[in-house]
Image (cartoon, rainbow, N blue to C red; front, side, top):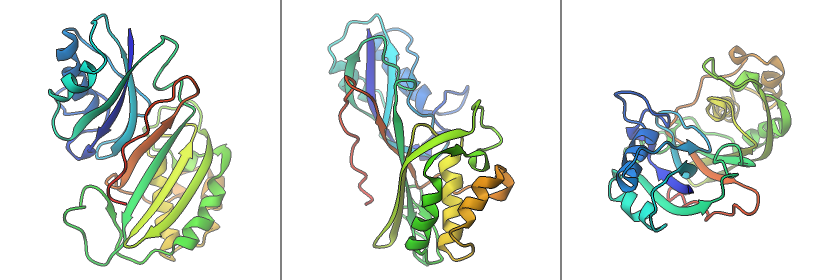
Length: 258
């Protein structure tokens, strides 16, 4: 059978999603826990690979297994073998045409910035600290240039393996909530470091170092060197993956920070 799972994790303890020898990763830790429940080796496919330090409240994965278990065993049994920083929130049996990555219509990421002169302690790994005041209206204006399908070469890392730099951004918003500046972006898919590179440009614009139109200039350059530094991973969360019917899964858990 094919099983889909909804996963939440704190990325600060892991070297990203993808399993790596002798390194603690989300995929490796989950596969080990699921293997104990299935009593066989399990290989996971995810909706979106996250980098080291990046979090998720709405990651979706799937795996195939010959083990016959009650659907709840994939939640409760797996969680009993997981560290506190990862949890399986739900499990669903699906047909074999479902694929966590290739069936997805869109992914939504949230980037959380703690915008105060003094660095945070408790939030140090869960939000990005930016000490200069950020102008949210300028950031929102800049974000309008991101909309639609276009070439995002200026926002992809040198390690990106995607065959095409074309991506379709369908939603963007940035707003202030007290000391937090929160941006959300949704697209059909994302390039490696794309959201963090966009966040780096937005913080320069919000801080008054660049005009909102700089976002358009960076996009048109199609050159990573034209953009800003890559923003830290601490504030980045994969919060939702959208699928077509009949794959209407439970919503992701709320992000307590905001």
